[in-house]
Image 1 (cartoon, one colour):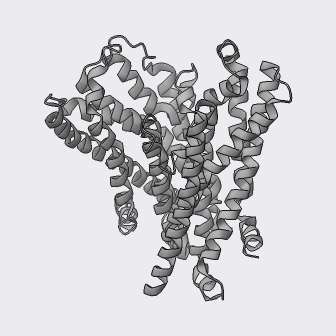
Image 2 (cartoon, one colour):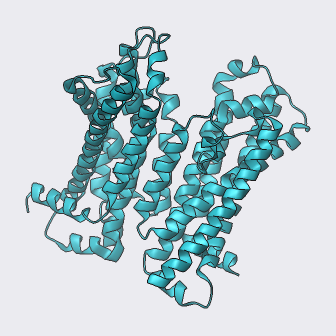
Image 3 (tube, helix red, strand yellow):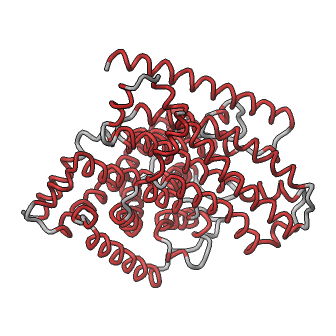
Length: 240
Length: 256
């Protein structure tokens, strides 16, 4: 119920269009890169999908994370802007349902823009490297991993947005966190587990057990963030 | 009402915004890694840059590429939202003050926030240089005139970018689009500083200026020099266009 309601709420926020536009923009990155600098990549060693991901993923994931942060801010901003939150709190539903509904909205949109990007990477692999249909499975695997890695930042930025009445505070914390993620050294496994740094990982450049470790870490972080949100909301309710 | 008192009023509006907390957090996150990894500054023989210059330039490069433009987008959001919540903008528009004047006053506040951020960053640079000098037993300090000059040049080069962000905030009423376009426009600046048409893309100006300075300080590194001829006219034109459209559009949606 609340997921449907959340989708109806975002109708006039432009969120769907923004995610669609962002997805197309990120999907254009590998395409433009191959159009202008293809000789640089065609001579590289490795599987086409790995080459494409290594060349473009930093920029694509940056766009993805920024979009989810902005989306999370807007989703809670529409509740706080005209005191809608107070009305929501009078309803006979738990406040955390709202959080799950909003997480569901961003997660669904994330699937859509990641699929757009996956299609673009697969198309680039087919066009410039002559890859056959067997790359489709590999691309889907990589983007499935990317979706899982995007889950902690989605939940964390929603948590921050649910706590800040003012959109600029949650957006400010979000962009500073994204910046911090880009500054972290990639050699240290523990530091790369920072939720906003996870989406920058790709399984192409990781060993099999590292992929598994990242997947477990992302799932654990997601559960922890949800638990934290439940606790914070319940405590906050006591003081309001 | 004269322009300066309008700017003062706009400044006062941001008093309870807690935006300084965000700016402080950003500055700490910017300089903390430099202090922790201060020993890396000694391994730059390949580039031929001295450790103290490298310490300074890496921090300011990180700031110019993403952190500074992104916090400026956040500040435009703040300026817009404080006015729009509770329809404060309607009260402002009912005053006998020209809308263009109001719009420019807000832009001046945005400019001053950007100057504050550079000053904070310069201050944090000296603080972290002091800590790094202690931990590494090496003098990381650079003359204040040089640091302030670099910060000043970067700030001045950011004005067209700020005008563009201000245009986005004023013109586009749906917040997700103004934020989304603002933030995504920052991302390609890394690519654009390496192209010949960099001067047409205001979001990469500060980053271009500091990268060019990096090339000057590092003996073995070739970076594109700052050439004023196509740049200054282009930057001036972009600023004038962005500011005129935003002055023209300011308050239009509310007066419908």
